[in-house]
Length: 228
Image 1 (spheres, rainbow, N blue to C red):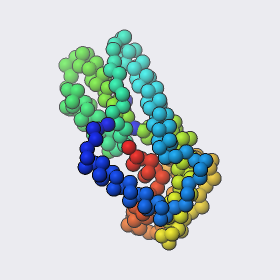
Image 2 (image 1 turned 180 degrees about the vertical axis):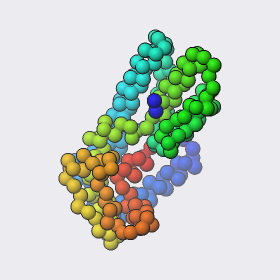
Image 3 (image 1 turned 60 degrees about the vertical axis):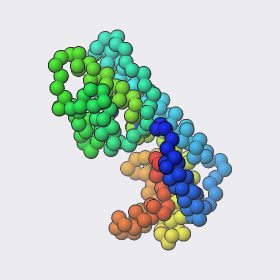
């Protein structure tokens, strides 16, 4: 088994400053998005709803497995606390499981898995309690990337329009060459995969050049993943 805090005034000020800076950047480097493309807020809401539905289906399958293993047991019903990136899922689960009374769990495989070899149990009761704790922590901290297939058709139209109207003009204005943007279907098919369109492919040699270009002209996935 395996992706809101209370408001803080300091965070609000920082977020507002970042939003103003980002808006200024887009104004300098972009053309107007297509009026037929959903707004970012709508895309995010639909994306998260689709991911949450897929997450609920995953939990339902897990619940079936646990009840087949342990009988008609009650399982916790938890809302998503927050989505986490794949690399931080393991450490997040470790903290959650430690809070549940199992401090011997450790992250593995770059944070994308968890290792139970350090957990000492004395019988079936503790094994059951570990399973329930994992189910609860899994409920609280899913990884949105696990459900990319469910959200691709929602994210891809916005990402394509944003790439065409914001990222490409921004890179061209900065003196960079840009590979041709694929058609809608081609862009959608590759979105969130290793074959995804890379607007920064011709930026130049060395990680520094690409890093600077990505900071100046944030990619669609950077905007989508950075939104709260």
